[in-house]
Image 1 (cartoon, rainbow over the protein chains, first blue to last red):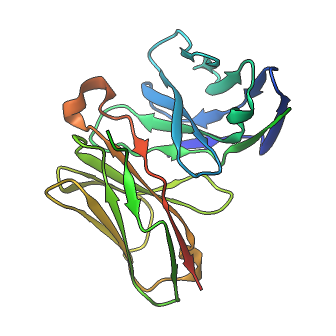
Image 2 (cartoon, chains in turn yellow, red; image 1 turned 90 degrees about the vertical axis):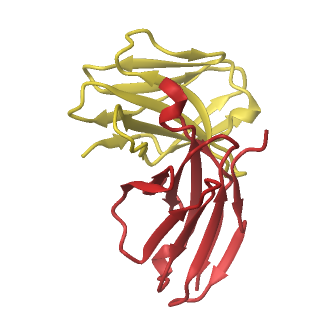
Length: 116
Length: 117
């Protein structure tokens, strides 16, 4: 079974600084998708960024980028120029490729605090 | 376009009771998934439906059931509620197989907070 581990229960960053959130996963599959979701206090889970395992190039979305190390099964999220609105719970998630089951496997999350 | 909607927002039930949670997917989305998020944890997969058929089931007891209607909305039913069922229940919709490579991307609703006393 696939597992996703987020080893940092909490992180904090100063506004305008950069922070990196860690995620490792375990799978025997060779192709899969990885995601970072953001969950603010409003509870709405928002997709931040996605990575297809077959792509070697790291995904980027504006201030958000990932460092995908397939051999190490590591998928970290870097937030640049942190803003107060980035404060939220961040979840790393995994999904296998293929089939009609879209099940996401989530980590336990990292609570990010942004200090003004 | 409206996002995924869920009702009710909050719900308080007593142990042993039954509860029905509802979800309306984004227009055009044909797949709905349900997740349970216990406080302080990541969401856990419960069910996925696509074109009104169950396509996946997580490790939850038979007290949990779901269905999808012809308009692609969905209900999650939980019987004989236990204190441990208290959680945020999230619904997510996807385009499904017809959506091509991005058909798998899941868009979440705001959730239903269930409290069992």
